[in-house]
Image (cartoon, rainbow, N blue to C red; front, side, top):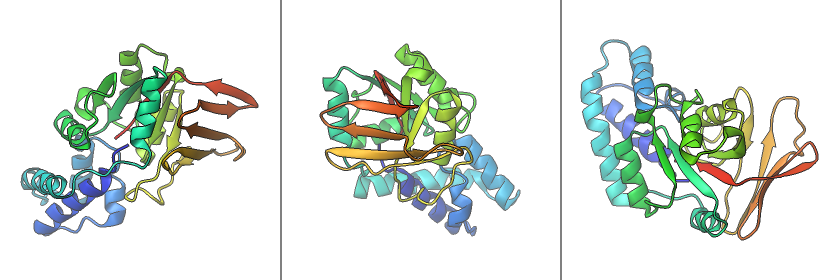
Length: 238
């Protein structure tokens, strides 16, 4: 939905570098889509006890906010048309993001989409972060729906695993910071473009013919085992 990951990546890598630590791309990739406490534990495991976590915590938000103030937050192509489609069709939606509430609110406001969702669930509101399914289960609860009736749009491996673990369907959207990632239980990628998108859904032992098609205006359906399934709830992710 919002291409925030490159902004986080740049801020975290620069903050680490200023403190004398090299957070390379491969190491950072293990953090994508996970809540901040999990990421901090991963950093301490990777760098060891000499890593100055408190100084890192203070510095990276400064870099992140400066970047957002100067550059804004890029949105995925087709986002506003897609949100309009959801509203026109009276389809409920929720944001399920690993970001803490303060950063999620800041991001949504910077992108001009505050108030366009029925629920917002953030990483600091749940006990277990992605790839555990908790955040998607909570999003479904707040929408008043069974998780199996929801579909998630995700741009990280952790998010795809979280969404699929709660017995729903997930579509992997493209992100410059997450391209090339592999999901242990499936690979789902898509490029949202202006008026329409076709998204391939591949899993181990499953034919690549299973596809999700989204169009504006139009329908949202996932052919599965030859059947066409229509959806009345959509869960989006930052």
